[in-house]
Length: 381
Ligand SMILES: NC(=O)c1ccc[n+]([C@@H]2O[C@H](COP(=O)([O-])OP(=O)(O)OC[C@H]3O[C@@H](n4cnc5c(N)ncnc54)[C@H](O)[C@@H]3O)[C@@H](O)[C@H]2O)c1
Ligand SMILES: [Zn+2]
Ligand SMILES: [Zn+2]
Image (cartoon, rainbow, N blue to C red; front, side, top):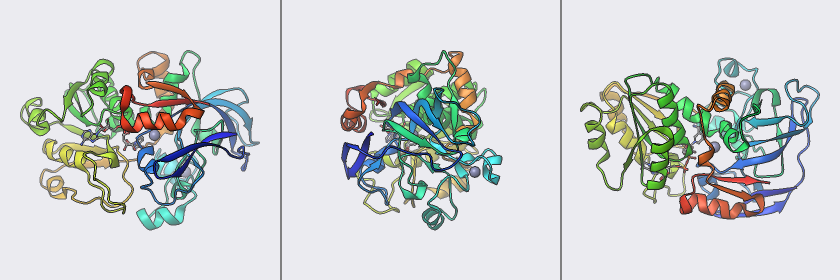
C-alpha cells in the first residue's frame, strides 16, 4: 500500500510499504478515508523526538471503513464506518477502568523508554515512535487498529467524514481541556493557541456554559475562525499585552481557567536546542502568569521531556491548580459524535485543505508554515 513516511528531519515521502495484517485477536484493519495533520506531528516532522526512523508512517487522527476483523472483535463488522481514537488503550487495565485511557498500562509497547523518561508506561498512539508503541500511522491506505472494540467508534449516519474525523483527537482533547478546568457558567476562560485543539477547547468551554472565552494566537485567520465558530473573543499577541488585556476582561482578577493548547511549537522559534530538557514553555508561562489566584491552568500542548524556566513559584504562591493529560478520548467520543449528529458540534471548517495522500508532503508544508489559512490538512488516500 501507499503511505506517507518520515524520512529525515523536515523530509517526508510517499512510499510503498507492506499492507498491515491482523496480529492479535482484538485487532481490525481499517481502510482510511480521512487522516489529518496535527500539531503533535510538528516536533516529529522536525526530527526533534528521539526514536523516529526513516520509513515510519505518520498520522494518528483518522476515520475509515472496516475491512477485516479479528476473532475477538465484537462491536464492529466489515463495511462499518468508524472513527478511531488516536490513543491506543487496552480497555481492561486498572487505568482504563478508571477512564484514564491515555494512562493505559498495555496500549504502548515501548514501556522501557516511557518508564525511564516518565517513571511509568503510557497508552500507545498511532504514527509515533517506539516509546508510544511504534504503531504505524494513519497517513496510509490501511491501518491496523489494536483493541478495536475499545478504540473504534461507529459514526452516526448524518455525520460527514470531514466532521467526524475530528472526534479522533482534537475534539476529545478540547473537551478534556474544558473538563479538567471544570469550566462552568460564570467562568472566564482563556485559551492559548487557535489551532484545531485550541478552537475546540473554546467551543467546549462555551458548550459548558462559560461566560467569556478568549483565544490567543498570532494568526488572524485562525482567530477569526475561533470567533465565528466557537463564539470566542480573539486576541492577537503580536498587538496586545495579553496579561493586561486578560485582567481587563475578567474584572481585574485574571481568567478562572487558562488552557495552554500550544505545546513544543511555542513561538517565537529558537525554543528547542535539540535535547529534551530545553523546551521553553512561552505560552504556558504566560498562562500561569495571567491566571487568577486559585484558578486552574490546563496543559493540553504536547511536551515530551524536561521543561526549562517553568514558573513553579507563581503556581505555588498563587495557589493554582495545574492539570494535564493526553486525551482519554474513549471516554468522550460517543458523546461528541452524538453532539455532532445533533449539529451542536461542528468541526468541518477546520479541514481547510483536502489533498490526496500522494500530496502529503505539500499538506504538511501548508500546515507547518500556516500558509493559505491552513488549520488542518486532510488526506484522502
Ligand atoms: N493532550 C492531547 O492529548 C493532545 C491531543 C492533540 C494535540 N495536542 C497538542 O495540542 C497542541 C495544539 O495542537 P494543534 O493541532 O491545535 O496545533 P497547531 O500547531 O495547529 O496550533 C498551535 C497554535 O499555537 C499558536 N501559538 C504558538 N505560540 C503561541 C504563543 N506563545 N501564544 C499563543 N499561541 C501560540 C500557533 O500560532 C498555532 O496557531 C500541540 O502541542 C499538540 O501536540 C495534545
Ligand atoms: Zn492529534
Ligand atoms: Zn488499559
